Length: 503
Image (cartoon, rainbow, N blue to C red; front, side, top):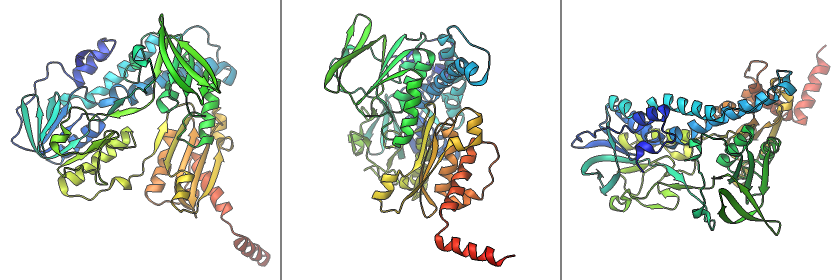
């Protein structure tokens, strides 16, 4: 497909986006004799690798076949959060009268306007990832298909780039499950759903992972009749079950019909309706809708890269790397979604910084040393960092768990957001992992990430002053609770003796 027409609708906002991240009149430069670093892929991992290396004075070439900015800017983080923000605002407007005594709201919203707002914001952000900006950073910017032709050369069309080091940062893409008949059905993925300009009256979502839950809940908040299907017995099956249960309850309250623990059998078109046939509790059932979103699975972008010619080993999950993010060709590194089980923009950024150290300066930075938080932007949000309880026990840790419900956090109650909790797994006050389910969990989990990264214990959180009233005060509360529960009988007896002696 012509890259200048990948974004729909091709309005003034997507025109700006395209002009920035894949300008149709771009002329590739004459290559240098040899590059310190050739970066293949212009998503977050590639852009950070290229900009960081060039900023240090290295000769850098950056190769991108589609849109700079990758999934995050174009079909991931940025557009999805624009949609989620709009959907939350629509729900808040409907509920402001009952929840806060505000003015009653009636009538239909303007979905097309909400989506245009998203496209306008995305276009405004896109200059950060533009070809012109990276050219101005001193990077040789090549638009086109890159393919390794040897262990130290990469071809872009008829041009050959020689390199000392290279990094594969080609990311991943949506993958459809092997459902019979699905190929004949008009379905959307995260790569196409943000092109909608009309609100579907009904939507079936396959997949109860982060993308499926975020979009199912958002479209239900817009007013679409949504059905969510998954083989798991609850949404977000990789998360703490209690946290997932809070989100699941809110999704149901928002109008999402959940069909969980099901086996999808086939999919088909009936007129303009998309029909999914599934088995539930031994019975064959079906659901029909005007739109279908498939949100199951990702596939690494390794096809057509000439990895065999470069001596780079790869498999179904992507490029094989060691703990320093080196491939089987020690001159080539890989980072981001193409080589990581943690497929988050911030992980790609962090791994790119490891690549810069290890590829250019013989560094010994380790991927396993990263402390990676993540968040699913449902309402409420679920954020996590570190170990889950089962992981900690499997690792032989003597785990204790403390949970503080947000119903005990004054600001959360005042905001009308008392659902959720902070759950911390620790070993004698050393924080091993934490799960936060709250309206603003993604904004707060960073404090736990700092604590784990720098060895800050629960006792130190207790002694840290947090402003009141804030929802972030839950961090101090969990520290206070640790201090109270850590008082042993011996210490309590000692305190009792002291106060008997003190007059």
